[in-house]
Image (cartoon, rainbow, N blue to C red; front, side, top):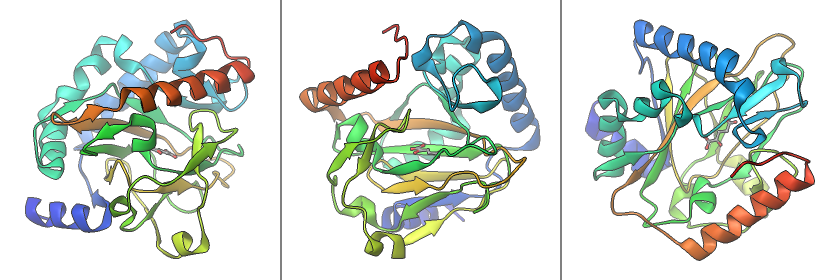
Length: 252
Ligand SMILES: O=C(O)CCC(=O)C(=O)O
């Protein structure tokens, strides 16, 4: 798809797929650094930077954030392949946030509850998006993302607290009408899906026995965005309460 068509699809649907976004050599470089980070850096991190489905079991590692502690991942968001795509879809210059990593390990009951990222980010105007790169084949069996088509155009929906570590808030009035508009996203390693910060999305658990569902993600915000600091503070306090209730040690 050419850049104009990508933007038109993104503006209309709130998400767009770019197949074969990352060439094989760059995918290998990224995976090698992720393996290194998981082995060498994750054991040194506070609980709030690496989440497990079952505490202490490395094979159930399901989410990593604040990855900018590592020089490779600190520099990664500035790579032009990523910034150029983000800027062309947002429609202005962008700033990239620290990378994140999401997994649904096999045989774990880990759902992604329906949510809008900008409920967490509190940015106005909502010129913010996520670039989500598949590291494994992703389909219905291992818990693909599901987007509610066009939902980025309806504003922020009410959210309420969840029990899900890493996704502390969920759309509270998610309905069969939303489900009817859901688009499941099937990807191969190196394929990318981009979603707008106000697109409602969710994912089922990984029902497979052996297949991981790993993804590398980066959030880019337009330079015109400002944070609603009061709303952001409320959100952060809710996250802190959730972490305390789950007994996590939080360093920041
Ligand atoms: O990987 C997932 O299941 C969720 C990712 C997500 O919600 C996001 O990147 O905004």
